[in-house]
Image (cartoon, rainbow, N blue to C red):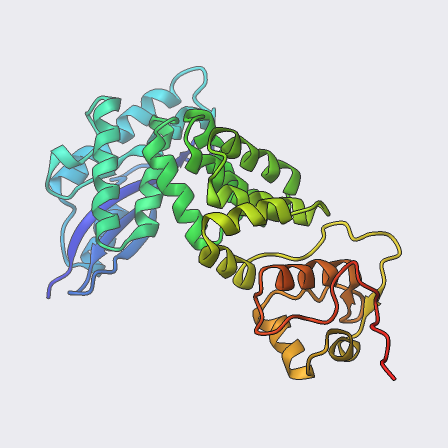
Length: 347
């Protein structure tokens, strides 16, 4: 199968160096993935500014520069040169629009140059939808990020990016997008949930608590908000059980799954002078085997945060309290706060 061109996207212009960065996406075979060619065009020099692009296309896809790309790039270059001639020509902020330009190799209606801003937004949205349907989530997210330069409060794009960053484990980016989403759509509960979740991942529990509070004020029986609030309170050393109890009533299976698999039993600020227990001390303390303790550490979230691989007593108390309260283990544990640290021997 012969390679074919998909799109050309501009990555920006540096007024100090005169470099116009771009990427060409093409498909080299029947597989759905895209190959990329990255290059820079040098403006203000003698000769044909598009020659590096022409050379790369001849090398990689054995094709000339499509006429629509040549026309679109020359339009962009002309606009840049007009900006450079102005009094603020060296201000990089004047060239952010360059990153919103995307060219289809054959269809002017799917290329952004020479269209008003509103139409450019719809063109970029169409590209993002198509790429997402093809399984190209990263490319779709990139296009939507460019779309937000034109429409900063586009809630559909903000929602997609929040979900994308969540799936990629990119907590800082998710928090930033979710914050923009809540400002653009204050009544959207999902936006506050994504913001709270991102803030939890970043260890910003007080801010996460405020995000979940916003949800619970509007929807007092929201399962995920109760679980998020319980997590935020737990990290802060507060009492998570009222919210865990509420979540348990709403959906016992989902609550048990979270408590077994993803709940964080750490305390961000452990109590001063908190005792610690070695792993060897846990089996008799809990009435289980050493192998079971290893399972708890690996699969059930028992935190190992003390010095030299020890378990902090405050965190152990929280963890065992949850395990027993919600019957998450086949049998109850012998030790649970606020019972004594060691059960008396029966003689």
